[in-house]
Image 1 (cartoon, helix red, strand yellow):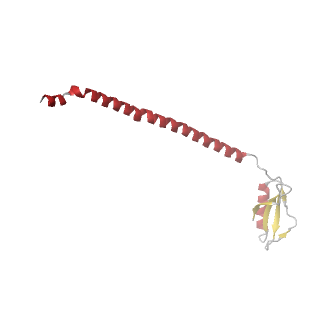
Image 2 (image 1 turned 180 degrees about the vertical axis):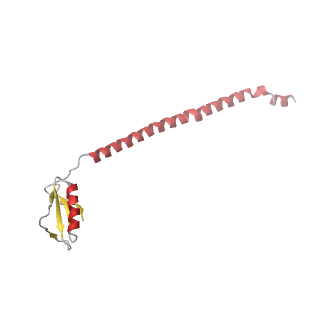
Image 3 (image 1 turned 90 degrees about the vertical axis):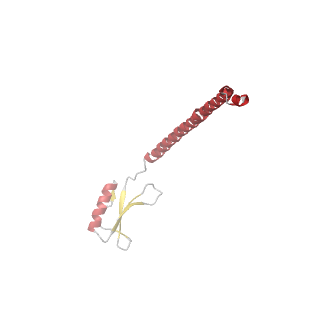
Length: 136
């Protein structure tokens, strides 16, 4: 009977309780602070890197897109008849310095001469063929 009472005596379990509390505390610190802290730090730096990379790529694409373009300095209107052959109509203006004015005259010519088509072209460099900007 003495042996049975010795088993249920709380003083014999004090080292076990201390070991469990100590292990659970270190387990809690390990999985509650240390490991999440490592992952939070890693993902914080990784997200900062990704954000800076996105900002850099956006700035680079904006810079490349915003650079000055080679705009033509002279626009011409080419006239085509109903069969698609180049033709000429006397007393109409065909040389322009701005895109908007050439486009406006093309629309007016299309109303006046409905059986003809008009193309607004420009030569960007001396070695290129004329580039068609608008066609009606």
